[in-house]
Image 1 (tube, rainbow, N blue to C red):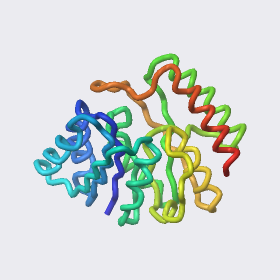
Image 2 (cartoon, rainbow, N blue to C red):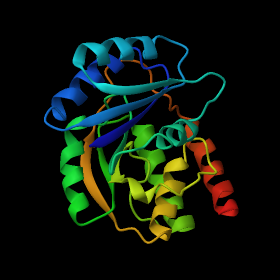
Image 3 (cartoon, helix red, strand yellow):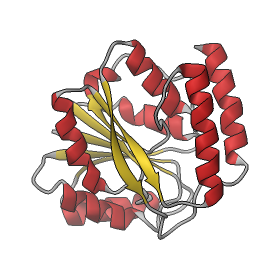
Length: 220
């Protein structure tokens, strides 16, 4: 059994394709979808329809007035029941085909973080490199923390409470998992440019992320 946590914000253009692809890639595996929706569009409506049509075991949580990707992920983590869990975005920048190869690495590790080979806009690549430098400087983590696909043994996160509710929750999650003594590995994936919908990241986002990173370091 695998629990798949999917935080969503206005993904009505991509959610159907994502669910069809997820079902295809995990077709021979028992999995449960935990979708946490902060959208103001029809993401949840479309997701329910697709899950019914595809016979996907699902829990769809519609939230109002609560924002932040980290906040949405934390809500999803509270519902984990399986021994193996996944966090993945619904925008198809991270293809579900990588999930099972990452699950196989759990034979030797406890937490597998995807590391991106990017096909994204230049300013996102530069911003990512700068952000990774500060993550290493402040937290000693020498790999890509922000890639939106993570596979892990559920026990890794059971006792973790995140202070950051926004973009840098990934750093805090990985830092606390490592600090708890769990074994972490990386897995290289190709990140693609989304085909539908709009990215939630713009040219100013990295500035806010760097600020949040420094504030996080002061808190933990």
